[in-house]
Image (cartoon, rainbow, N blue to C red; front, side):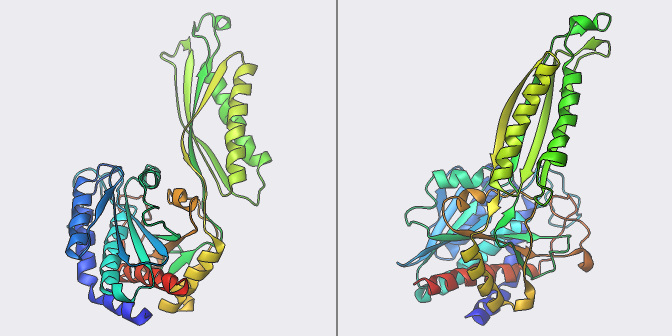
Length: 393
């Protein structure tokens, strides 16, 4: 079975690359994916599917009959940054597929074609999840709320992400975590309220900028003294805005923070301590602080049993030496919303390492993928789904 999927994917190489380059050329962001969605639906229709819109900008269809249902996710959105690759098919609209989602969409389209060709031999059903707004950490949840996991009800799922420009990104090799796979990610806003006063009478005011400065320093103590040093976490203050002139005390200051953690427990602890430290520090200096959790995503945790199973299918298709178990990554992934509902696993597919000359990594405007990885990714999507259904018939 593995040779057939890989061989057929290689035969589709030019089509996969062409689809990827087309998607890349009109990169779109968030839920505003008019051209992308139209292209995906047209391609799926040409393969014999009847694709449906799901949620604000998602697309889905199903192949096979009866039995278990296995979900394959591919995200479609780009980033709002100017592309600097100089590629002939580069997007010129101020957006950029520098996270490889064009590759995911093209590979999942190819997997849909592969599985349609093998529909009569499938031991169950495969549901395709073409997802918007992963970069906003909102697309998966939107599709879940619109029913992607129902009718037919999904039993398990897989997401795949290309990786470029690091040690775990050699072209055509697979990397996955046995358990925690990605950090949580939370955006937090702290509004410090003081009392404005003229610089000649500072005693009449409460300096919001001074309070904000003390909050920044105090927050770093959480990482240095309160989090287990063997459990990596991140807590940064990315922006501070406050004050109007150089000779007055600021009556207000706003801090924007980001925190990441590998476990649910540490995530909850960081959020609790941000609130306690901000409010306590402000009160110490006669001010007030309001803490708002703007958005967030829990850590992505691979189901260990399913990950072990999918890992073995990857080894069947590729070879044991091309499949690696790796530690948790400090990136954030909104497939977490699916993982909270059903058993899932999240694979990374190498698409160019630094040793192979790929200097720029994900989210860099000069990032370029090695398109030789695309047939492998398409075959992995299709083969792992088919093998799961076969093993759970």
